[in-house]
Length: 113
Image 1 (cartoon, helix red, strand yellow):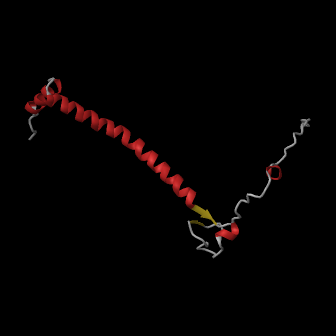
Image 2 (cartoon, helix red, strand yellow):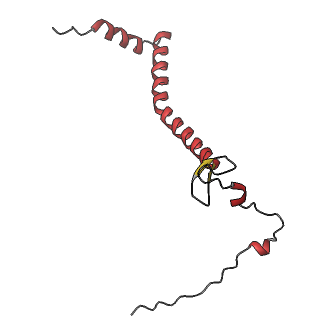
Image 3 (cartoon, helix red, strand yellow):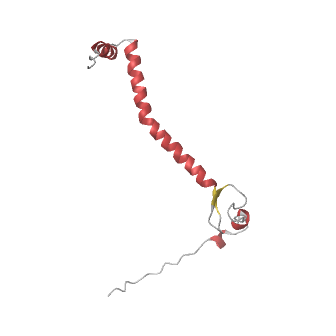
């Protein structure tokens, strides 16, 4: 047996939506807020996930001996190599002229037959 269509509740909801009273405005605001939340929430979760991934990626260290990646540890958990010894710290005593790589432009002639 089929249930009858609830015309009373449908007409009451339409009256609340069309009526300029406070109940109608509240219902429209509520529906608009829920719609906005459903549209913006995936974007906010995506941005939060991207920022979290970037923070996690910065904290990862890769061992130069075995290639194992780990989070903020002093020694590699796989092979025991110290991360401080395998990754040299940049020195402030290097002159800019010594650290700059000079590139010479060489014209390459096409030698195809």
